[in-house]
Image (cartoon, rainbow, N blue to C red):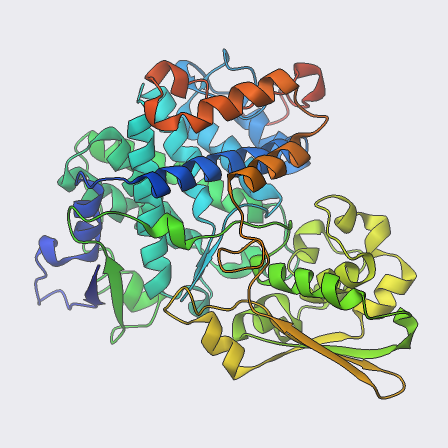
Length: 502
């Protein structure tokens, strides 16, 4: 790995394109670095993981709406849409839109946290959709996904977006474009222009994850994927993009991030070096914001030592800056304490999440968010006794560069009415690679089976798992079958409608 200094250059100070960050990313996207078995294994895991959460969310309104929009764009030789029959194909950018929304809806797939945060599995839907439409093999798809993960993780390690209230799809979209470029075997120049176009159009504000969080939280990564597909298509036709996109005098660092004196060091593999960033990412055992994963596990543990929840006077969660200010009381969002809040808001409230996990000793992707669960009087009472504070040590652990030293949880102090305290802490979730029960292939398949139970047939389950596990050897025709089909009578919005414009 090599760190690349990235700063703003005045227009009069010419920056050669080969010294620009977008070019350096394009160079590694267009190389032919080897891919080893452990990386292949993890790519397979994440394809299974994405499919599981997508199918579980298939009939939720935002996903059904996105699917209806995709169905309005049929295309012979196009891409599949999660849940729909494999013999029905649609324009790949709309398949990316529908599938990306399905993957993101439950907030239940993989994550990577560093200077910023991300869900690298959001790279999979657009890259897979383009692979299907462009008749690419499993090996081509593998290479594209490995690139998408690498670029995404490397940007997240170096450039903080949320500090400047920018949504994290600004790192996702260029990674998706780079991954599509690798998939298609495009030259460095073309990928360079596609990355720049993707960066230019994907900077949005964090209001999508603030206040009354709407369904756009699920749509945003899918929108990035659609933009990435269109960016690559545009530059394949010979068009260019704003340049230099990161370093320009009026570009993103100067006016959307740290300003004209801003500097970043972005780590990237050398050309020809293995891309192994996917191995630094981690999935979720629980359907909630990643910073809550370890705290849910801690709540399950602490529940065993509590006999009466009415005896609790207060609960204080000592945690990182990010957890406190994004999903904790430091966000100053009254919606995070509101029993009538949306699911999207509740999964960004560690106060709600910890209360339910402490009472139930478990977490369920549907039941834990049910309106009747959120409005239960004893839950509301406990929930409103919980607060968070930033602990500088937990913030330091959160931003630790060594992945083996990162910690995302916190220390919990439960004070009882009699003055006694129960204190415990947990740094990483049980399912984390450094946790008590790191996820392996069997865990991903078990998660798939749990989330798709009662939705798909056993034959369809076996077909999809078998196909995915043979990823590197799939033909183009088999890649086009890399989709999970739901019996049509169980799938809402399965036909073209006339509700919208399309």
